Length: 273
Image (cartoon, rainbow, N blue to C red; front, side, top):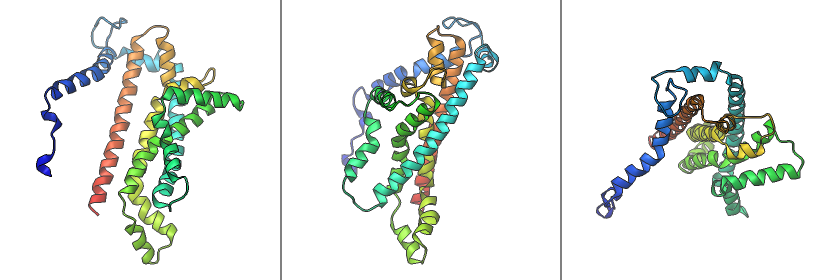
């Protein structure tokens, strides 16, 4: 079987196509990062290395707006990620550890539906729903929308981790006179913890970076960092926006990398059992 394995790297043109995709994906990000250190007010001509635009984010004319938007983004992302992780963990345990029930396949599809539906469709549907029930748009509407949208992103790593944990561990604990609750809290949860943390981090960064749904359901005067950046860009792209975008990019890379590392660490610990 090993001899029949196909190495896609040997396909003609695979390497060139890979390089082209990487260039198209990451060149704009690299350019934005480089010009965030530009001393000039121009976004096209280089005027020397400077940190002035990073200082402008915290102390410039728009600093108050960015700080308020950052607080909104962080607080919403934290609460949405915690709520989504709790719901996703409960759903994963019910779907994987629970007995078969009518509509199980439908429930699985509903959990993962936000991943398959275009985000613009979810945003419009959420806006229509809030309008239909007379729910005032604002901070709370963003939080609720993010909670729902983040559930499948938290569910996937948690479910993947749970499927890799053999049920025999819990059964052995019960055979040794542990209650089901103790088998759950003392055996299953510690083994599931890396998946839960990975799901939380992924949900957090998805909420923090979301723009489309937030832009539809936010009320007047409520801004998150993505919507604040969009509002500033409509008035013209300024170097401080590049600096702010670079900071958000670094934060996103950090949390995605941390989520990946935690998940891999959990896989290694599971295999060592």
